[in-house]
Image (tube, rainbow, N blue to C red; front, side, top):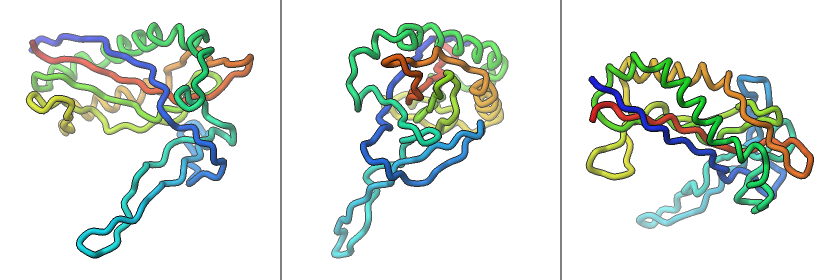
Length: 198
């Protein structure tokens, strides 16, 4: 089966900074850092005369080791575009995409034709440029007919690709994000995307 690789990478500053300093749970990460999550917001709705709580917002990283995690959308600071970290983000993401691609090439041959992606979301990058926390659903395949819909991939090849990405996350290092002469932790994301077949 022929594999075709498309590099689709993005550094997205997801909303994870909030004004409130009282967070929800604190998680100790694989690196020993502490990430404090936001409090889950819920609202009461009536369904057939019964009051139910509906979760409106999922917990998001707010603090890393007690310090605010920077978020571009919340702070809307144009100076972000001038930082070295922003300027080098595509180059660094491409490098890591290619690194994972090389390690996963044999496993990709065992997947059905289609478009695949593995997203790291709520990715917290520390002041030194290392990923210290992330969330993922694992490898997913895009549905051919329902645009934008993904399907979980549950086979040995997908499991191996998930393991490869997880092992490489600890090796990835991004340019330190410095704003106002201060290194900052920030929220980013990473997408490993590829196409199998024609």
